[in-house]
Amino acid sequence: MNKAPLPFSELIKSGQPVLVDFYADWCGPCKAMAPTLKQLADRTGDKLKIVKVDIDRSRAAADKYQIQSIPTLILFKDGKVVWRQTGAQPLHKLEAAVKPHLA
Image (cartoon, rainbow, N blue to C red; front, side, top):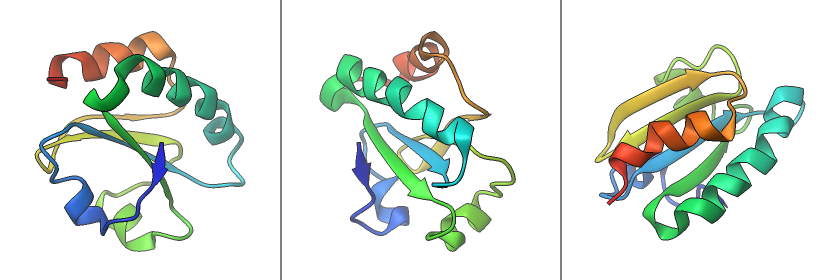
């Protein structure tokens, strides 16, 4: 899991699926998602990029994708939103969402 080093718009255009976790440091459910996202990263390896975007630091990205509740998870493939869910998610639901998009 990486903090976004590239501009957000470039990062999500990758041919590789990118799961973006919009979060905030003060958000309890966001903190609860961290171990689940780590497990997902361990299970998917380099087939999926997982990026955390702090809505307090990246207001433009949060505004562009109309993030109104956190955590919000958005899966991008080739720059397009292919799945979106708000709230903490169990590992099996995340795996089911990303599996069809993995190479």
